[in-house]
Length: 355
Image (cartoon, rainbow, N blue to C red; front, side, top):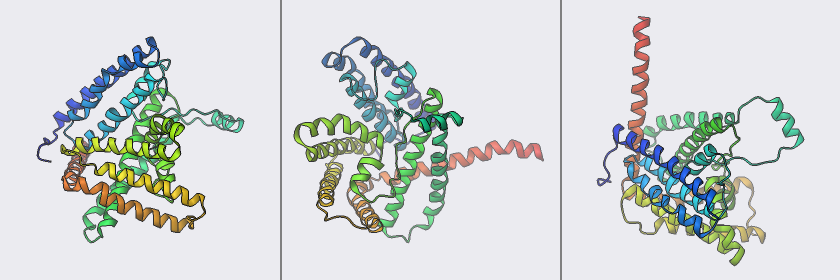
């Protein structure tokens, strides 16, 4: 990790400013081009110049946290959605109003499309809560639990490795849920639209198929389903579609490893996702044959143990060898110190006034 410069307030604010300018500019251009060109090769050729911009954006950040989120938002989500737009698929459409188009192009949000029933219509008319209200609770929950984890980590040295890595998994989920819910909170307030949640109780996992298909990072699941799984399944069958989707996810995580460690990927991320793809297919076939139908508590313990062990040995291990975990811990500690320092600074004038 020595090759990556240490982040400073000036460097990260400068990178955020550039990302804030470049992302809407690329989205506005993409909407302009898509409104004037038919789907297919002409539209894809017009949108292609934006792809290198999104690929470069994570390199602007020295903070691993910001680089990680930029990789997901720009290098993967934005490019994937623009490719789907070129094919007249996906959540983006040239007829979308400018603000929703820009927000949906560069942020992990998806407008909830549903036809309300009569009961839903009556309840929605009687309720005056704004569309962003549903994201307040997950934000508050994530902040509270992350604070508890931060206070507990100094006393976790006695924990076995897998138990500690389970806490890491909880921290990753809470961090992602906090960031995604915060973005959705602001976006829903700006657009006045109801947005979909990106997680569905992923810690209560009782099935690999349910975890990867209906619980974890639903934004990525939807895009992989539409861009990879559906067309491959239509031609070669369900199992090949699953393998193709996990193959794409593994390749994208290889890019993530490169962005975060500055080291040449060795295929370990790809191996992890293909391993899970094989077990997901085996689980589905065993369930269909009546071989694998354990009680829910037993399924929770077995699947959770499988997830923690494979994530620890196959997913975390390459990042730990590269020192990424140390760098992330240092950044988290620095952020906590900054927040506490800011709180003390802001509260100091009130203390002086009261005295």
